[in-house]
Length: 199
Ligand SMILES: C[S@@+](CC[C@H](N)C(=O)[O-])C[C@H]1O[C@@H](n2cnc3c(N)ncnc32)[C@H](O)[C@@H]1O
Image 1: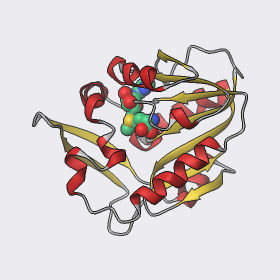
Image 2 (image 1 turned 90 degrees about the vertical axis):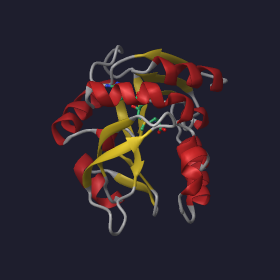
Image 3 (image 1 turned 135 degrees about the vertical axis):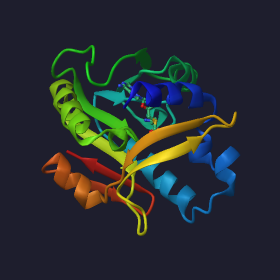
Image 4 (image 1 turned 180 degrees about the vertical axis):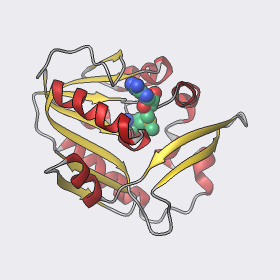
């Protein structure tokens, strides 16, 4: 992600959960089946068995709070982390860069990244996977699903509640495409809105 995109997430933190909850700007969006899929995704996250789990780019902790085990959430944005910290009953959060994680090799059984991988360009995705695999034995990548009529790769013009505009790179995958890219990945969820692959 570019510096501008990272600043966008810092600014977006207080309104980020509108995306999940269908509130604020997202109230006007037609998203049939969204809430059912989100429930299924949350159940999937809570079903992951691992002693030590790292959620990279955890944002507000909306998904992180469903993880079990010893949970650590990291993000580059302090505003995101403040929300995540207040939300997580168990677990800790810390500011860190996803490409240079401050953990020893093999420190985690599982690394989770929700709606982060699909914001990385191809070279960034390759670089992230090397770092992710250094610290964790398994990776759970969750992202937005590629849907009919949606361009797989795009730069979106996003608007925040204050009217500010931000260019954000987005790459959408079907569950199978994501599993292929991750290499020997198992599709754990392939919905209309979300995909989740364990690799
Ligand atoms: C779309 S949000 C996803 C938040 C959360 N994982 C979720 O599933 O809702 C992307 C997150 O990536 C974080 N981020 C972007 N670049 C990062 C980096 N290099 N290191 C750590 N976090 C980063 C942003 O601050 C933001 O919280």
